[in-house]
Length: 504
Ligand code: GAP
Image (cartoon, rainbow, N blue to C red; front, side, top):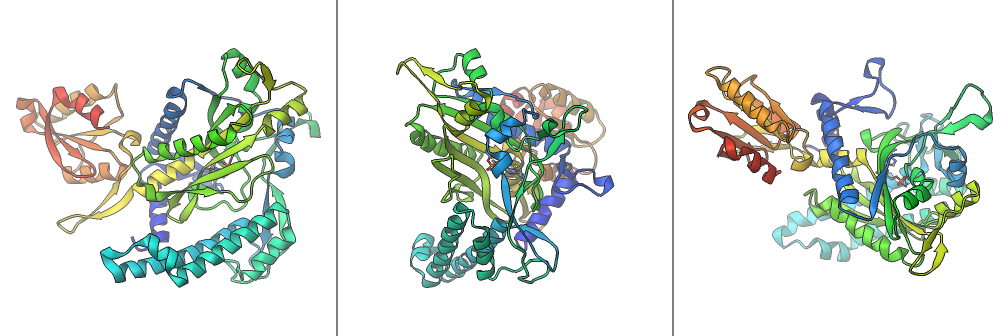
């Protein structure tokens, strides 16, 4: 594919064409940064959620899952700090009248410098061929070092300004870096202002301030306010975790990049409650375990990296992001935070209820410390989908589009295809479809030549195509084609369920 932008356009159009993701309310011209999942997207999304739930809840005896309401008492958001501090620093360009997040403008500027480093590496790779040692090159090449120094200085300055909430300084940094509006191309910027990201709504029929509710901007607070309920009813002993998957809402101003930044999205979060003083050990543990979860999907490790936070929120004593190489560069996929006892203490203070734990081993009560792992379902979807989508040139020179999704997450696990629409082959194929249906999602397709049907399945990521031919009627065997290798092998129908299960 020509470049990152073309590749990204292809991701968006492929997702729509094959029923993965549609713009929401499309027949009414859509709604900004809101998307609907179609018939295949819903399957993939459900599989992602199940895979996470299994790894986090089913495989940990000390983690349980809940499903709290989206509407919560408004004081929760006061206690959590969201009413006062869940803001984005925004800046407008006076010529284009476009509004930007100032941190995104700076991030994009840094991404351009990172691209320059990449170009240097590519040039050197071409020059040195197989002898090219990237690690050595980036730590010794003068031009790369100069670019890296610039990046480090911008990061440090940005962190300093954000920590001091210095909005005038932020504007000055944007001016000093010579950042121009991508639309007007000018540097005619307004001052930077803070903008709250929560959606407000009303409950009941009386319109006054006390009825203002917020759509939750994260699922985490539903876990904190249920800490005692779960701990007591489940007789949970520290360390233990509470997990939750659910919708969250943010009035993102710069909502772009498809499902990367949406106004309505889904999170998979887990709060892990530990003894005070052990939180940094647990932070390290979860940082490693969560990266292993990502790697277990089979996407090569070079697509992931940690980004340790320089600017820590006032309640955190350690924070890192797991970033993924999206078509538009490395960006946050998951956040892992050591949140101290901030949330439970604040809810104790605001609710008047003591949210503590009696540790029978220590014979004392304390407010547990918390490690949070928080990952977006939609961003995981985008990571898997964009990484899997490829145009492959085959030996005969033809090109096939294949969606190499992790097999266990693919919407359909197999497609059953009668070679022709006669001679009893469709009936046999239907039999096989019904044999497999109780265990997995299976598609039946008899339309068009077999080659075209293979391509259709490749494009939606189906790992196996099962072809029923005339021999099937006598030898009771089928040809199974592998999506990635395109190799075909003959398997008896009797062994088919076991073969598929062991290869998924
Ligand atoms: N409770 C912590 C929390 O919400 P966050 O970094 O704001 O932390 C966690 O969000 C994850 O949720 C992110 O890593 C990202 O995957 C996802 N996420 C956040 N905002 C999003 C948005 N507007 N659209 C899609 N996913 C989003």
